[in-house]
Length: 79
Image (cartoon, rainbow, N blue to C red; front, side):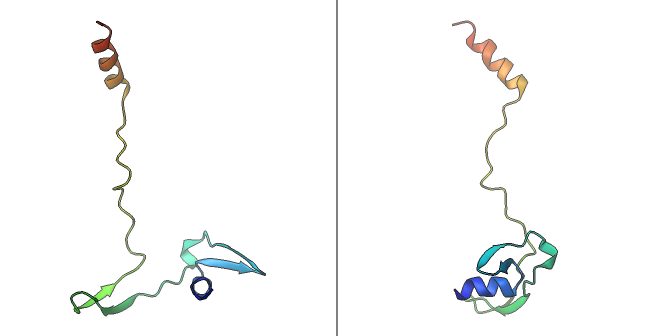
């Protein structure tokens, strides 16, 4: 598979014989810092891959503290 071989060349995944696995040492990754044209605006933009971290948008779970639990249980104890 061409995509898998490209990831091996970039040292993101490692190949040993017929087996593939992730390279957990991120400092060894060779991610090219491409500069190209944006397909939508056709402006020259820098496509800096690897410079950003994913947002925590998916982790929106509320944390219920002990105080909040105590308040909730005291409100419902009158029932």
